[in-house]
Image (cartoon, rainbow, N blue to C red; front, side, top):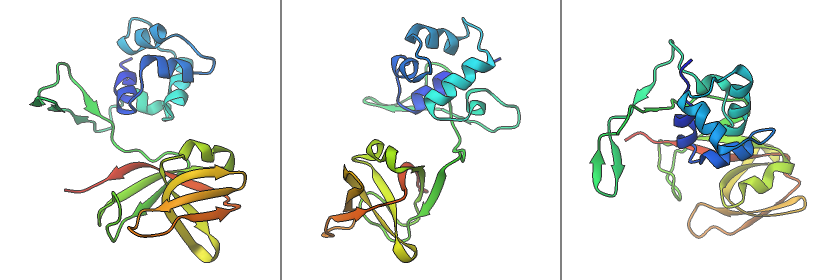
Length: 187
């Protein structure tokens, strides 16, 4: 079976050691490397462990005949654009459980009009994972607050809005947050 473990790991910006430590139970970076290169057989159990460590569905780690992958034709680096040394593909965006979408209609901060934003729903015990990340927080009467999460103190959170000149917001008893994980921008 041909796997895409390396492609997914690199797309997530993780090292072999990061993935090995995130596996339950933890394993060694060498084992992850052997599974990536095919020098060790990848079982269903290993696929599920590594998928959980990478926070992707197990199907994202294997090549499927009905899925269109996007071939990488160039790598933009310090010396400009170069052809990749080996065949690589990009992961197509895949909805996963707990993902939510947002549409940007008016540019603000790092976001431009027309951007689609994907966000992962977090429970209150996970809020600290989103420190220094942009989040969406529900407010009463169907309203929301959007901005950079700068602090979590008990049941209160502090957001720095993306609009220039906007004041910091302090919200209490927020039932969930949606942490921005992907920006899809049309050019």
